[in-house]
Image (tube, rainbow, N blue to C red; front, top):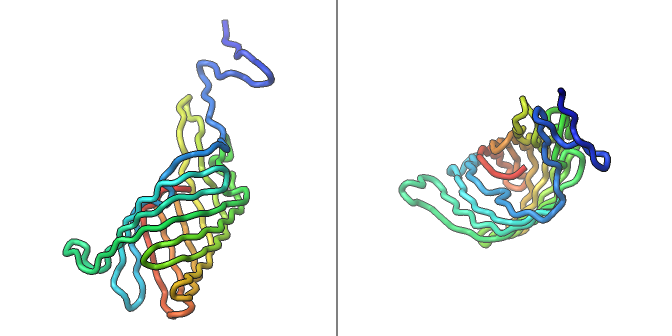
Length: 202
């Protein structure tokens, strides 16, 4: 005798050979968005490696938190030119590509996504950033009755303005899971930069 799923109010409960991926929740969440490590190479300057810890909250497309990055310039092992900075972050994401995906959309869903963000550090001051691009936030899917997760991925163009030194940078950034790679050009200093890192968040 075969198994017949029980239906209630238009929903089918999963049977012994089915799994039910979680749907995106719009409730308040705690997280460590933007926490991680990143190395930046700028023409004419020493390499900069930053380690940041950024606990915060999120609800829908809105995110906010505090940041406690520790930045090393040059040789971090020798403790040369090291500084610690504190601050805060806030951002708002929009577009289809900024939504959590389920079912088939975990692989091929997503689309346009945008993000407006602001940062403030005690050492470098405040900055604002606008990012526009394509992305997919990934999500959960079923594979042989096992619930698995597809990493988020995105590629975007951005413009960033720093209020302390009155500089503006433009660039491109790509992300797959925690891996982030990008490049930018400072319109004031006329210097290009490259960055690579591992950061939490989608």
